[in-house]
Image (tube, rainbow, N blue to C red):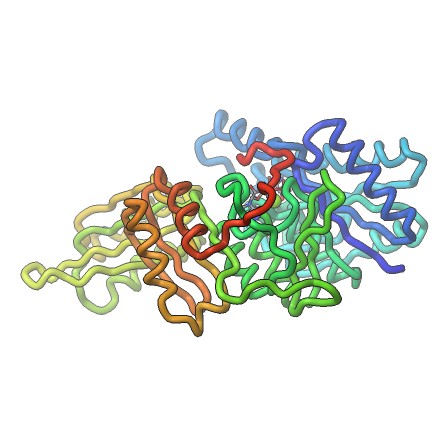
Length: 423
Ligand code: ADP
Ligand code: ASP
Ligand code: MG
């Protein structure tokens, strides 16, 4: 039997009981004859608590020190998990991301993995140990500083290690039974998906389904690593994410894979931009130079009398202050009137490869929203996704009506959420 990589999220190791429960599961996999490499997240909401703490001592903490602080969370859980496994009579060794050979670029707080050299992990499992690796962190290739991979980054650590170690599968253990047609915290009637393609999962993940991080899915697709998302609280089979369904994995309905929502973004509107070539370029160059990723962009038709237009775009709330500061600096050269910042928005997305060839999906989506009296502020589409921005207050109702409108509601058991605070 080959090597498996198992990743346990924060909700699975929230307390000592959780760590002991997970340790038993890991030992089972070892007893079944696998070599086991485990990637672990910080306990419960530790990362959020550390972020809050940093905010109390400094409004914009230095990226380097912020990463140093946050990686402490995963250090705690990795050592405790190794202790719990040893207590069950099995050998385990814990490693930081740097020790595990996770090499990144030097962009603090959202570093990208550029190489994985897992020599120490390989030797450790070859000697019969279970290797425990701290998720979400690495070391920068140039300055050798400690970096973090962005929120939810342990998923990416797991897939990157699975690729580098040529693992059979990467198992992502979490607090729900797999990937559902919508967030089970919002839609009780969400259905568990048996198999989903990398393509659809990538869209769901980048549209806010935080059950898997999009970078992790990108990585898995590039190296063709099958992912099995499942619960660490139940013995049930979860969701397989891969190129094609295998064995008895049933291929789900083709039209719509699911509905995702995201409340982590904000909307910036640049009001009164002269409607001439080069203006948008200047604005977005300033945003790019501040290393901010934007999502949707909409430009209004300019008013004939003034020749001025408004440009709106969405971005992560966490980059809001930085974006406004960067745009302010371009005010004189661009000549816009004012800036508006709105963080009370939500994005709702419908994802499914089947919509490419099915007319009427957009109409049904908008009708469902209108029936629930939800106003649409921005729209963007790709071949297999439609996203809209609405008021944050409307998000749960909107997700539910859209889920029902596309016939996604399950008629059997309610989706179970085993743990976590949903923070
Ligand atoms: P972990 O601590 O294991 O990393 P996360 O909180 O990052 O867990 O991800 C699991 C959560 O993702 C679930 O509790 C659920 O609320 C949320 N989620 C959002 N969309 C979906 C979806 N489509 N299917 C399953 N879970 C989803
Ligand atoms: N602990 C980190 C976070 O909360 C990484 C992770 O859990 O994947 O974002
Ligand atoms: Mg996660």
